[in-house]
Image (cartoon, rainbow, N blue to C red; front, top):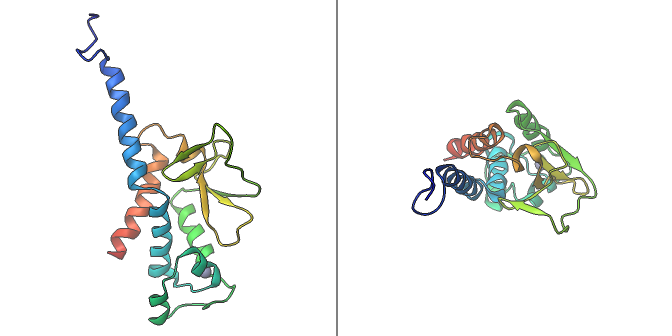
Length: 169
Ligand SMILES: [Zn+2]
């Protein structure tokens, strides 16, 4: 047996790579697409309280919420959430692209954390351009290409979700 081989037949480096890969998979389980949707909802509840049609469609407003407290632009097209949320992302160094004509049916198509992965887009989040309600459909290469859980983009994304979850709880 070569000196650097363990009894299981793998080198320490191979085992480390496998551990990193498992940690990354755990990350995407803990911070998947539905967690980001929750973050958008929490942001709306805590900051903007927008009750426009798009926010209602996206799930950023619950019916009970509309009954209580002050909510802006109830069931109108005037959204106060979108610009504020986009600014929040940009301040935290998280970028997004609005892209029309996205396709996610190719044989090499990859899904990470419930997001479609678009490696050709140099950003964190990819938003479907046909949708006017700001539904995140995917991640670009700044999140999807991360190879370990301590990647700078993943940490920014995690902090966004954690901060609003903590503030809401
Ligand atoms: Zn809105």
